[in-house]
Image 1: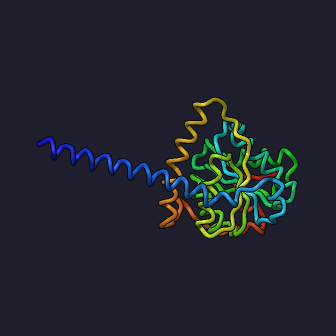
Image 2: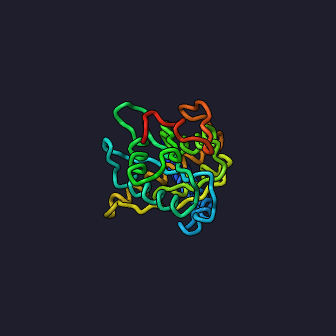
Image 3: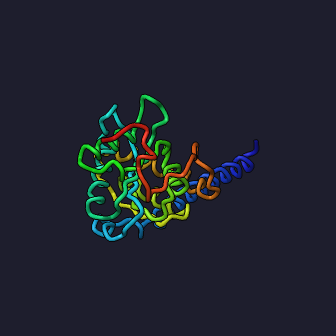
Length: 228
């Protein structure tokens, strides 16, 4: 290959790479900025009178909550007590018999005195997008307060608003310590924002839908075990 042609090829590759980096950064900035006004304090959320407080799941260990999701549930319980809503919607992964985020989360709430009939379970919240889609499609949610860690919150609020809900977010404390865990979360979340920005353009159905379980009704309809 002649040197002139090689130089042109390298310039084209560099231009494409630069365009990709700019697009990646641009989507991240857009998603974050779009959600910024909807991320509120716990005090502001208390005045919203939302249909529910949606707590997103994360790793559990049998019946024990991991630090990430425990902080989310504790934040959600504080919002419930403050009056942000009178309903909790716990959304997470219960795709396998031996792994169950949502019942572990509900048991945590019930053990702390919450009426089980106001704690709804979304057993098929396998991703942030699916949790938001199912909140509207299955539970009929129109206005909600989302609880997750701050690095994740912009994407969750963006998706919910893109799906036509009036969504607000309150950040739970982040138990991650040290530079590497935080950097890992940042890198993963940056890629996830780009992915979900694209997903929200065509809004595919989630893995599972199912019968309606109105958030205004009884949470027992979402249970797969008895709570007392």
